[in-house]
Length: 142
Ligand code: FES
Figure 1 (cartoon, protein in one colour):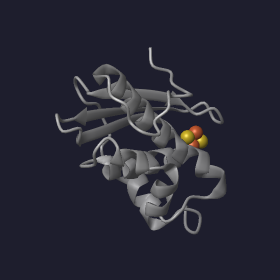
Figure 2 (cartoon, helix red, strand yellow; figure 1 turned 135 degrees about the horizontal axis):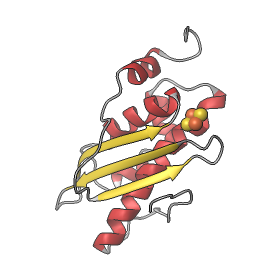
Figure 3 (cartoon, protein in one colour; figure 1 turned 60 degrees about the horizontal axis):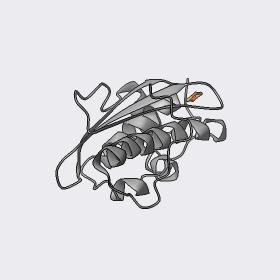
């Protein structure tokens, strides 16, 4: 049913998403809402003392494209430093997924924004600055 609309990689990450769940006592957590569709994404980060992302998990009330992009994005940030993680943009995630339909591009932004919100939470708690990181716009953390 998705033939021709979604790439094999999108279908793979949607039907078998990686890193779904929560991290207890996360180093950083970010929750954002998508302004276009109202869907929600929460990202948990476990970051070690060398500022390397040891683990990353997500929970979402989002569509299939949001699930696939978060699955891919969480895979891509694991093992990266907090600064390298800034390079995991929605564009990079979409490329890794072999593309998304035009109308679904905003869904991939949800993962990027939630990762940034979680990094912001971590940076704020630890008093560090991550170049290029801005306060989350669509943050809906309590
Ligand atoms: Fe809301 Fe895709 S339609 S995240």
